[in-house]
Image (cartoon, rainbow, N blue to C red; front, side, top):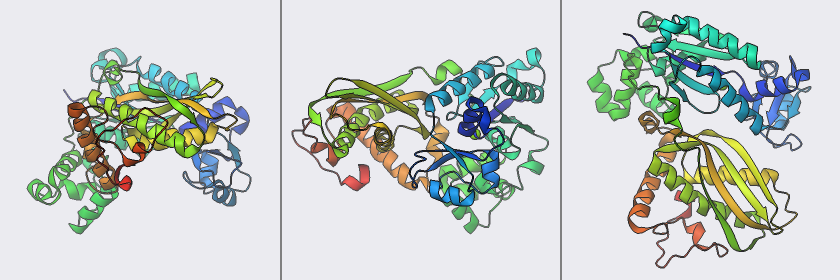
Amino acid sequence: MTRAILHSDLNAFFASVETVLHPEYEGEAMAVCGAPEDRHGIVLAKSEKAKRAGVRTGMTVWEAKRACPGLILTLPHYDAYLKFSSLVRKIYARYSDLVEPFGLDECWIDVSDSRDLFGPPEHIAHEIRQTVKQELGLTVSVGVSFNKVFAKLGSDLKKPDAVTVISPDNFRRIVWPLPVGSLLYAGPSTVKRLARMDISTIGELANTDEALVLRLLGVCGGQLWRYANGLDTARVMRADEVMPLQSVSHGITCNADLATGEEVRGVMLELAQEVGHRLAKEGLLATGIQIDIKDAELKSRQYMAPLSEPTRSRRTLTEAAYALFCRHYRWEKPVRAVAVRGLRLVRATPEKQLDCFGDYMASDRLGRLEEVMDDMTDRFGAHALLPADILTNEKTKCRVRHPAVLPKSRIG
Ligand SMILES: [Mg+2]
């Protein structure tokens, strides 16, 4: 029997949650920004009206204000986003126990075995769409298909508050005319390589000889070719399978108080080595980060934020942790203890590793380097191989007898 998979994507998630919490934003041009008072703060999300005025995610506050002078700005409230994310997943869970999160605002839901109970998949998709709107005041767009890749593509086709069905009968008509870059995991440089083979749409890729694609693009190309032909067989994982561990953390009380941001970043880099290694061992990625900071008077503070994509990269974890610290810590006192925690863990799917060329090239190189580091850590102990920056952390207990120094730019 054909599988029935939904991909549900919350529309303008951060901005929509802000609007639920502040009804006065309804219908206004508003944006969620890293630091609204700072001209250089970055737009993280925007309302539909702001989008129509030309406000884009990633713009600086200054650019956004120029595009849309009356723009209302607000700080992000990550606790609220985490709460709404979990409430939405609880709604999905009424229809299936196979709910696999992809970041904070997206989930796949396998409803193949829910048809007897809840009706055809398209009907379930509409019911979910209406329920989310009624109960939480948020809108979703849902793709309905027979595999995960097309379901995800479908959720992008019509939004907000819409359902798109991509079936074995209509996928050639709906999916094939789309640019090949809209396929999950087809990064910009894959797209460029395909363009050199005169392939620019999904249909053109689907109709190219598989052996040729394999020869020119390797296994990743072969995988994309199968996706283009609707042959993705990856399964939606059970909700309880996705998060066997809730979080992975590592913390340290320093030998001496930390007095500068640079010192704090150095300690975070060291902690992230352990967090990244444990995530790799468990085959997990973090989709959120939390830091615990204890000052010299032993007052503790915790801050958390979602990560822009699921990761276990030590460098990404470090940068996210440090950005969080810079955003919140006012330096009234020096820092005594630091912990870094990877949150909201998801299983690292094999598809994730398909990011093997393109703008993913650098992150893939980093990923492979980190794999080697994991292997060395397993065989020779926690301090066998470390980024050079860490060797200068005098305020932690990290001891290295025979340091092998790697260039900072590659791993720091
Ligand atoms: Mg979304």
